[in-house]
Image 1 (cartoon, rainbow, N blue to C red):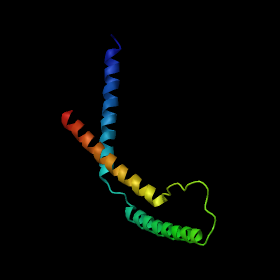
Image 2 (cartoon, rainbow, N blue to C red; image 1 turned 30 degrees about the vertical axis):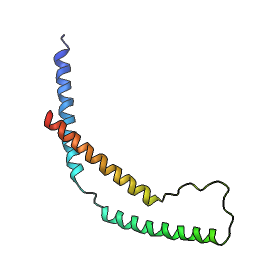
Image 3 (cartoon, helix red, strand yellow; image 1 turned 90 degrees about the horizontal axis):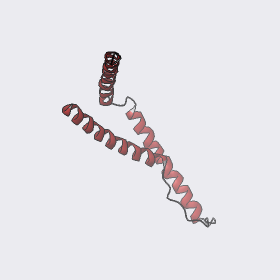
Image 4 (cartoon, one colour; image 1 turned 120 degrees about the vertical axis):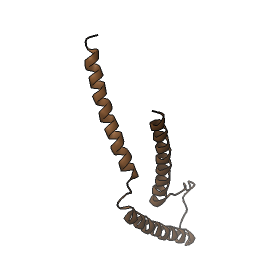
Length: 107
């Protein structure tokens, strides 16, 4: 029983810390990615290079090189993976924002 006031004070300090971290995180989420334009340019260039590489592969197969016995797995470029990741992250962030907003309104 005597330790309860100490534990309560400690819990309140932790709560204040977490609320401060939440406030900072909410501000950071609203900021735009400073190098997004550069990233998009690099992704476009990567897409071009992947297209060129795919053309080379198609030409090699057309020239009569032996095809592999195993069926080719679906190839996914790095650009495609990054684009898919960005889309899923944006969706998750939107869902998280909605969830956090509703928690804040309720709480």
